[in-house]
Length: 291
Image (cartoon, rainbow, N blue to C red; front, side, top):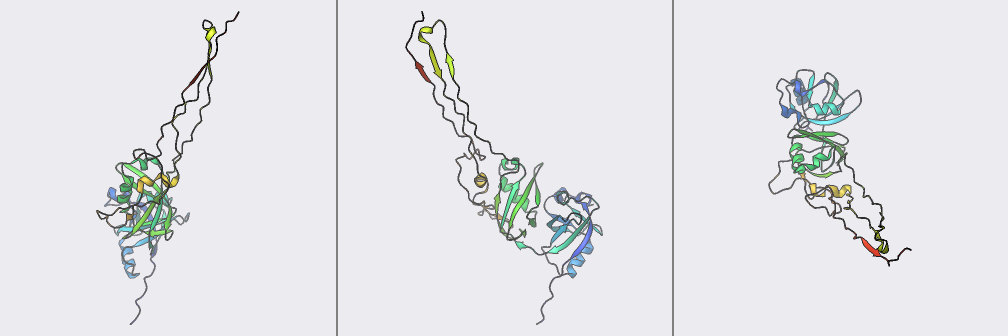
C-alpha cells in the first residue's frame, strides 16, 4: 500500500493591513489571533494538504519579530492579509508593510504563564473567567509574545513568559495549566519603622511634681510581604484552562501552588494586618522645692 504524501509547507509574503480595513469588518475581528487571507491562499493550502485547524507563523522580515496565529476567513483581497491591530503592533507592522506567513504544526500545550501589564486586571471581579472567555478566540500562544484581551470597554495586555512543551503551542482542544506572575506595575510596599519620640512636660507652677513622659512609638499596621507565588493563589488556585468548551463541573484554570498568606479573601493583594499599640508609661518622681 503506497505511503500517502506528506503535507508540504505553505510559504507566502503578503502586504499586511489592519482588519479594520476589511469590507466585512466586525469589532469581534479584533479579538483573538485569527487573520484574513485571500482565496488563492486557501487553494494553495489545499494543494499543500494543510488541514484544519490551520496555524501559521507570521514574521516581520524587517526585524525578525515572530508570532503564531490561526485563520478566520479567506476573503482578503489578493496579495493582502488582514491582521488584528494588536498583532500588528506587537510585530511593529504598519499598513502596507510586508509580512512572511508560513504554515506550521504546533504541539498541544499543557502549561502557560502570563504576566499582566496592569494590576487593574487582577482587580476585576473574576479575572480567571475573563481570561478563560478571551482565550476561546485564540489558536496559539508564543513564548515572549503579548496578547490583548478585551473586557467591556477595557483592553488588557498580558505577556506570555513561559509555555510548555515548546516555545509555541496550540490551545485548541486541550487542557492547559495556567500560572500568573505579579503584574508589571506591581510594587511591594516596604514596612516603615517609626522613630521613637520623647516628650517632656513641665510647668513652673507645678515644679514640685514635674513629670517626664516617655511616649513609646505607636506602631502602625504592619504591611505583609507578598511573594510572587502566593500573590495569585486566590486568583487561580486548583484550576485548569481548557481549550474546549468548559463543562459545568470542571474548573478551567490551575495556578502553581505557593505559600499561603494570611490575607483576607476580600483583600487578595496582601491586606494590612492590625498593628499593636504600645501604651505610654508614666513615671513620676519625688517633689522637691526649689529655693
